[in-house]
Structures are given as C-alpha cells and as structure tokens.
Amino acid sequence: MTIKIAVLPGDGIGPEIVNEAVKVLGVLNRSFGLNASWQEGTIGGVGYDVDGAPYSEATRKLVHASDAVLLGAVGGPKWEKLDKPLRPEAGLLRIREDLGLFANYRPTKVHSQLLDASTLKPEVIDGVDILVVRELVGGIYFGQPRGIETVDGERRGYNTMVYSESEIRRIGRTAFEAARLRSNRVCSVEKANVLDVSELWRNVIIELHESEYADVELSHMYVDNAAMQLIRNPRQFDVIVTGNLFGDILSDEASMLTGSIGMLPSASLGEKFGMYEPIHGSAPDIAGENKANPLATILSVAMMLRFSLDRNDLAEIVEKAVENTLDAGVRTVDLAFGGEASVSCSAMGDAVCAALEELAS
Ligand code: NAD
Image 1 (cartoon, protein in one colour):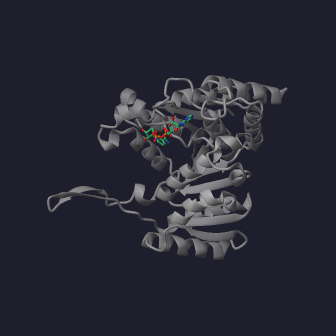
Image 2 (tube, rainbow, N blue to C red):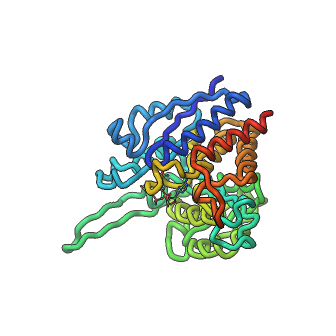
Image 3 (tube, helix red, strand yellow):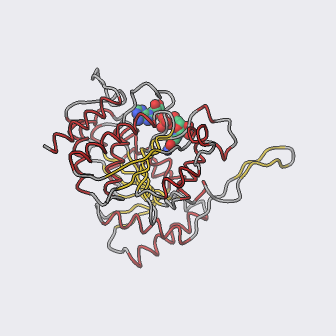
C-alpha cells in the first residue's frame, strides 16, 4: 500500500528545508523500498496568500487523507499585521488542534561531531540525550478567557493557564511510556510553588506514577530551576514532561545545547495523526539564501518513519546517514566554526542523500 504524506512547506526557509527532506524520501523510495507518495498543501502565510486562510479547508482535507504530515515552518514580517486568526501562527495552532496532536516530542541529542558548535563547554554537553515531551493543545496557549480589554481607562491583557486532570494524565502517560524505551527517568516540570494549575499537574503526575508507572524514576522540578539545570548539568535529564508554555521555552533552550536550532526535529502526536517539523521557525533573516540547515527537517522524516510509518529500520538509516554526513565534515553555515568551510542548504541535502545511497549499496 502506498503511504500518503501531506507536505506543507510553509513560509521563509520552509520550502528550502522541506525540499531537502523530500529528496531524502525520494532516495528511500528508490533505494530502500519505501512506497511513499506526497502531495503539497499550503500552511501559514502562504496559506493566507494562496488559499485565503493560514489553515485552509483544502489543506485540512489533504492532511485528513494522509498517513502523516511533514511541515516546514510558518511566519514572517509580511503577515504580522493581519488579524490574529489570519496570522500564520494561528494556522499552526489550528492544525495541531484539528488533528488532536496533544504530545510534542522534542529530542535533544548532542552530536559528538558538533561539540564545538555549542556555546557551552564540551565537557558539559558531551553525551546529552534529552527528550522533552511538551503538552501541545492545552494550557495557556488555548485557555479561555483571554483577551485585551480596557478597564478604568487603561488596557489590560490576560490569558488563562488551565489543565484538566485527563489532559495531564494523557501527556503524563506519553512521557512515562517514552521513558520506558529510554533511560527510564521522567522529570516533571511546573511551577507548583506559585500556580494552582501546576499544583494539580504535580498531584496528577504523582497519582499516575503510583498507579501505573512505579517502575519509572520520577522527579519534579520548578520551571525556573529546570531552565538553570539545563545549562548547568543537562546530562541529569532523560525525559522532561511539561506543559505547553514551559515546554516551548525549555525546548528552545535545550536546542542550544546542540549548537544550532537547525539540528532539532520534532514529532507532534495524537491518537490518530502525526505531524513532523523542525523546532525552529521560518528564519526570515536567511530565507531565500539557500543557507538554512535542513538536518532538523530531515531528522523529522526519521521521526515520521519511526512513529507514523512503523519503519524504525529506515528511521535508523536516515539518522545514520546524517551522522555519516557530519562525520565527513559537511557543515551548513550555522554549524561551521573556527574557519570551517560551509555548504548550502541544498548541498547538505545532497550530501545526506549520497550518504543514504552509500548505506544502500
Ligand atoms: P527562528 O527559529 O525562525 O529563527 C531564530 C534564529 O535561528 C534566526 O537567526 C535564524 O536564522 C536561525 N535559524 C532558524 N532555523 C535555522 C536553520 N534551519 N538553519 C540555520 N539557522 C536557522 O525564530 P524567530 O526568528 O523567532 O521567528 C521567525 C518567524 O518564525 C516568526 O514569524 C515566528 O512566529 C515563526 N516561528 C514559527 C515556528 C514554526 O513554524 N513552528 C516556530 C518558531 C517561530
């Protein structure tokens, strides 16, 4: 049976990086017997420009008819002045909500070849392998009421951070299950010393742990401390489970352990669908220059193979091809330090494809 993939390149560097990931899919089809087909749709700013909405009905139909979604990135200055529901980021929130993608997996693995690319000391980051499991469709990004109103002659902005027991249990289960396949440790991050919603979060995680996951080592950390510990001693973490806002911030911080945000893939998973995208944005500052790092998007294809297409074998091959490419010293500009030569986005994609072909032969 042919696997159907919805490809949503989006804005800025999105089309450039997704193009390289699609080349990888082509090699997997040709040389590794993957039987995948893909169809492009719009999302974000380009969705508004072409289809009149950041998550159009046409794209909704396409993704619902697909086995998995590969997304580039959305956003850019061109669309910043639009009404909020028409802005690119609204499209992203809507597709996550529509597909019920409640769990965002963000692995942060330090590649030994890139130890010097990080701003942190090599001895601090060597061996780091963290999985941030972020709740994606609840919390303060979706809570009601929200808005900006005028009270006593001045404007007041507000949002609501809200989690129900079932939402906490659902993401907690995802994290405990993931930990069982790794080093069996979960650190739950919240702000229970100040926030009621976090107090509930902690209590539900403890209950879940006691009732179903007593074999997994559980710890708790306040988010401010977690932000500090990630820089001080990142190797202490295996799986971090946290809410939408804290996960957004901590996973970007964790990304810098690896040296470049251009290295980090992500998977957003629900009961039925999976969507795969790099964790970075549309990088308008380098869009159209063919110098973005496509490896996060290519590694997102590996996550797609593992979590949606049941092809862990091919996921490992793609990850090996990326390792071999880095071993060979191929670097995009964000990874090149100390006078190292750099290659373009498309040349990096070609190098990974060549490494794949070599693994096939
Ligand atoms: P960004 O991640 O786009 O860029 C931050 C910095 O990292 C920039 O200097 C950029 O050049 C660099 N960078 C990012 N990806 C790179 C790559 N693959 N290779 C090399 N360098 C890379 O974040 P930002 O500048 O805060 O946001 C730009 C736009 O992206 C905004 O409109 C924002 O809303 C949007 N955004 C979208 C997503 C998403 O689509 N999931 C995520 C974050 C931000």
